[in-house]
Amino acid sequence: MKTFSTIQSPHQFSLTRFYTSTTTRTKLTFPAKVFFCQAKTGTDGSLNLKVTPTTLLVAEKEEAKAVLTLFLKKRGLSTAVASKIINKSDLFIDHLLSKLHYKHKSRYLVGRELTTFEIRDALLSFLESLLEEHGDNLVDVVENYPDPPLKEKSTVVPIPPPSPTVEPKKLKASRVSEIDPVAGKLRPHIIYLMELGMDIEQIRSIVRRFPSFVYYSLEGKVKPVVEFFLELGVPKEDIPTILTKRPQLCGISLSENLKPTMMFLESLGVDKKQWAKVIYRFPALLTYSRQKLKESVDFLQEFGISDESIGKILTRCPTIVSYSVEDNLRPTAKYFHSLGVDVGILLFRCPQNFGLSIEANLKPVTEFFLERGYTVEEIGTMISRFGALYTFSLTENLIPKWDFFTTMDYPTSELVKFPQFFGYSLEDRIKPRYARMRESGVRLLLNQVLSLSSSNFDKALKKKVEKMQVEQDVAA
Image (cartoon, rainbow, N blue to C red; front, side):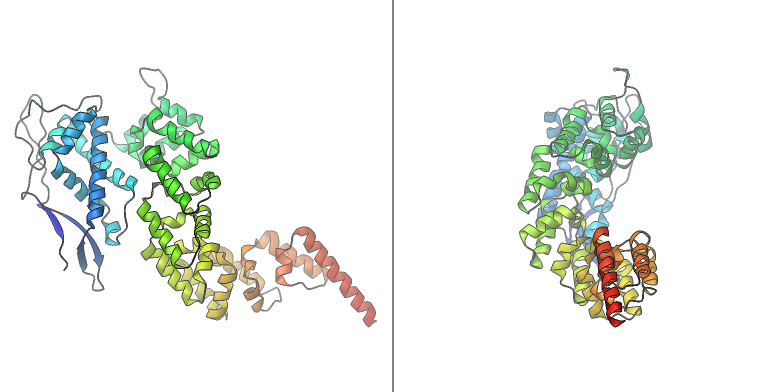
């Protein structure tokens, strides 16, 4: 087993809840050691542990400090006081990281980096639970971790009301529609979101999934991000969908995170004129770290894809950056290569293929065509000519269309020449066009039957009928 680093702490420690009128304490026990590690499962099922990269730990530690600072400020502490507490709370910061690693241990098992917002979500959730447990004495817990004092210190700055405890997610969500007792109407940020087209249930759903959203201020976070998207050309009616998909966007700093990330993506070739479409398709794109984005780009470059083409891929299919290079992209590329496919071309034409499961999606389609007499080489040709072929459902698309194809009196080789057949609607295109061709008494190539526009299809049929009549007249 490889070595790993630990943060030593006493065998156990207690977190003490103090009450103003009593000395009663509640003790919580914690593990004796905190491990910072990544693990990979061996072929025998054992775990091999290795030290998490130092640079990653440093970055995570800085993020943990930032999250704790913001959390304390939201509890009413000044920036100076919050910073002072952070500076002497190294052990508590390390404990935050241990909670982060434990919550996302499956991600660390495969070496996948967490996004800034995944880190914040995990840490905020833990801090909220501590606040619920210790209320006004949370500062004591932070400063004196892992050995809180046995009596209340007079120098401790109390956490002020009105929120001594954290509300459960359901309670937070239910309070979305409460009337502000001061203003006598709905809270400003609720009114603003509703003016954008969101209803109360949508807002409640966001708060249930992302409790931190309730802490975002209207003028400081929500409104600036929304207005920036509107400046980029995002239609107002699309904003509710975007915020519902990724409410964390409202926690992004425009100057420090969002704009620099967009500039970085534009340097990779993302069309700045297409940001409205990109953000709508995959708003999470703007929450990924540069390291994660660069990993995806480096993978695309391995297959000789130009920077311009990479930009087009990220514009048309931004979700590709969410796929793990080692768990999804590389194994999928290897699978398609085994079919004789030019992976670089396929990545450009249909990057969506690389988010599919090899076992659940790709292999069943390959087996489907093999069972119907096609060779591996022919299947490779079909996917090369029609990249979206593997994205279709077997039961809802491929099988019913194949069944009808067998009644069309075409050789199976016609599908190798024109696999786009599977991309047309069976009821609205394939059956009506084929019926008209049969009624005309002529025969067109499968490509002509389906790919021509309505007017050109009519012309092709008329021309074929006229030619057949001339041939019949000559023969007579």
